[in-house]
Length: 122
Image (cartoon, rainbow, N blue to C red; front, top):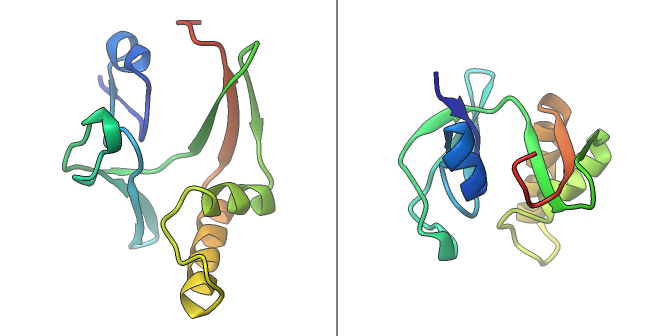
């Protein structure tokens, strides 16, 4: 059985059979009360992308750490983390408000985790 992830390093892909939708960012959409991540053809420098949709069970913010730890974020902190990673207007206005509301809705319905990990297979 394949394990699904929105984004993973080569170690995850090689050793855990993770599926990388996009090596940079994915599109997220709520459809019929389910949040989905979509691969998109703009993959940044990794060149990794596939045209597929998967349901989102959690969002993991990867960080390099001295030990492997995971911390669930509050809805507020999850919203801020998502806002830092989306493509949205930087000038104040209705589009920026919509982007904030979208991130707040996503982080209130899907757990956002802060994951610090060592660069090894552990």
